Image (cartoon, rainbow, N blue to C red):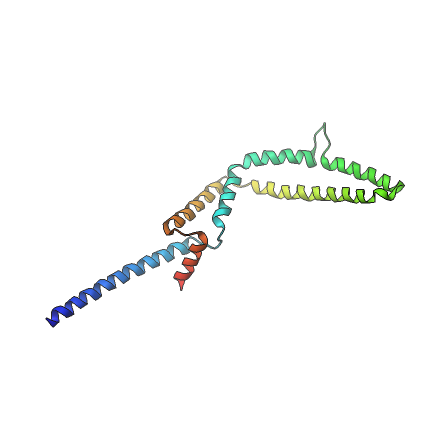
Length: 171
C-alpha cells in the first residue's frame, strides 16, 4: 500500500514536472518571439500606419507639393511666385519707409512673412525628399505592420504592453 501511495505521488510529481516544462517552454517561446520582434517604440504601429499612408499616396503628395512649390518659389512664365511678389512689396515698403517712417511696422511684418514663407518652403522641401523612397519600402513597412498586428492579436496586448511583457519575461 505504501508503495502504491509513493508511486501515485511520484506520478503526480512527474505530471506536475511535465506541466512546468511545458509552461517554461511556452514562456521561453513567448520571450523569444517578443525579443525577435525588436519592440522598442510603443507608438511604432501608429507611426508605421502613417508611413504606409505616405508611401501609398506618394505620387499624389508629390504632385500637390509640386503645385505648391510652383506658386511659392518656382513660378511660371505668366505668374511670379509669392516670394517674388513679397520681394517687390518689401522693396516698395522700404522706399515708402524712407519717406514716411509710420509704416516701419508694416515693413517688419512683411519681412517676417517673407522669412516665414521661406522656412515653410524649406520644411516642404524636406518633406518632399522623404517621399523619394524606394519602392520596396512600402512592402517592408506593410510586413512590419503585419508582424506587430499578429503579436497584438496573439497576446491581446498593445505594443507598449508587449514591451512590458517581454521585459518582465526577461527577469
